[in-house]
Each structure stands twice: as structure tokens, then as C-alpha cells.
Image (cartoon, rainbow, N blue to C red; front, side, top):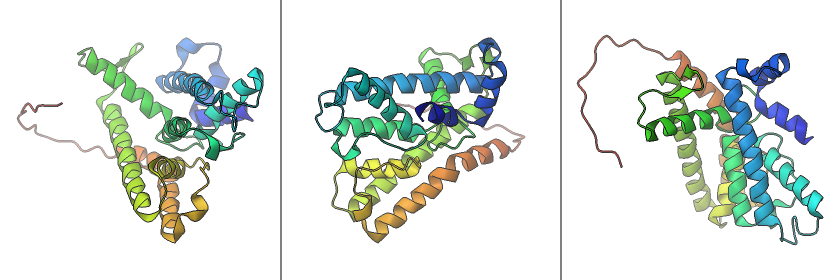
Length: 250
């Protein structure tokens, strides 16, 4: 099940290209390279995080042997980004594990796939943008290709809107329920990432809370894909340029 979830979380274009040219990584598109590498990094870091945090927790990984702990941690790192199943009791995890799961659910899976989140491609592009800025480079290069400015702005826009939506929904759900910030944030991100996971408070957030989570699931399911498509198609030619002015940042 975990392997099937990883494949489904890569997205249809990436799965198709991997099936066609998996022996020739040098010919992969930038989309495939970013998706595969970011997915691998998230799986490794997620598994290690769950192992470190939950290793001695008697209510999660504690009772399992070493092999069982590794398998359960790997499963916990896979599912928040794709299928949403769980073999460990999420309500008994440490808050640090909830935060780790929040990050995985918010990122989600590959573009044009069934997974939710802002997509691994978006995070991968942002990482390259930040790296280029830190190095003082005028262009963002990925391998032997240059990243268009439009793709950079789309990645920043989708991420900023995702953070804004999650932040606003968390604030509202905190006002509507008596639960702690870590529990409420988990519910909000799970709804936005359409992950289907919960700390166990979903049934008790009230009618207004349920409606808020439903809206979040709807936004999370169609929002990033729709917004990405709209930004790609909304190109207007400007026949003049305004004078530049430097602004202090940071």
C-alpha cells in the first residue's frame, strides 16, 4: 500500500515519464527530477523524524521491534502526502510528530495527481529560488535549464496563499473550539491537504467548525490546481515599464 501511495503521489505526468524512460534519468524533465528528488527527501526526513520522536513512545512505536518501528515510521511519512491512512494512533503522538505531519500534509504530492497540498514541485521551485538568491544569481538555474520568471512567481503565490488560508482558518477554528493550537493546526492542515487524518477532535468542533473544514477541503482539493492553471493562462502584455525604486527588505 505504501508503494502504491508513493506512485500515486508523484502525479500522472511524472509516473508516465518514469514508466517510459526510468533507465535514462538524464533525459527526465525538470518536473520529473524535482518531483522524484523532493519526494525522496521528504520520505527520508519524515521517516527519520518519526523514528527519533516516537521511538520510545509506549503508545506508538515503543512496543514494536526495530524492523516494525522503521516500517511504521516510513508508513507514517508516506500517508500524509497521499492516501491518508494510519497505522499509529495519531492522537497519542507527540506534538512534534503532529508538526512533522503538518508539514508533509501541507506540501502534499506531485502536480496533476490525486494528492493534496501545494505540491512538491512548488516547494522544489522555491528551494531553487532561495538558493539562487542566496548566491546572488540573477537567474534560477536547475541543472542545464533556466527557470522562467513566471514559474517562480507562481510558486511564491501558491505558497503564500496556502499559508494565508491555513493561518486564517487556524485562527477561526481556535476561536470556535476549546482545543489547543497544535490540535487545531493539525485539523486545518489535514483538511487543506485532503489527507483524511485527525487527532480525534473532528467530531467535536461543532457545526461552524465542520463547515469551515468542509470549505478547506474543497479549497485544498481544487485550489492549487485551479490557481496554478489560472496563473499560467493569465498573461497580459504590458507595453510600458514603470521606473524602478529600491525597497528595504528584511
